[in-house]
Image (cartoon, rainbow, N blue to C red; front, side):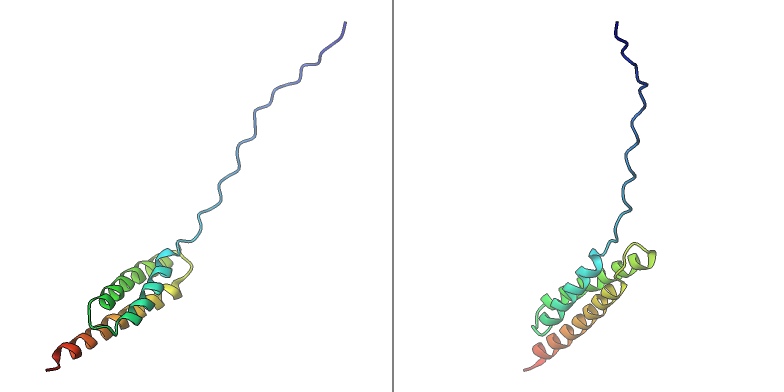
Length: 103
């Protein structure tokens, strides 16, 4: 008669821990891209450059706050987007006032 060995059954190993979440750099990159485009469009006496600049200011503020909290790693991009957004808004207001004030 043959002897069939019985092996003990061990539980499976737990799955590995998920990796930590990556940085949330979307707002800073969006602020920089929209700020640059708003700066390019601010020479048109219309509201396109103004809206793009305002969005860049909003996204840059959010991106800077996320960088201050340690959730993002691109504080300089968010700050540059904020600055280009402010410049785009001011420049668009000046261009619009000059364009519509001429007789």
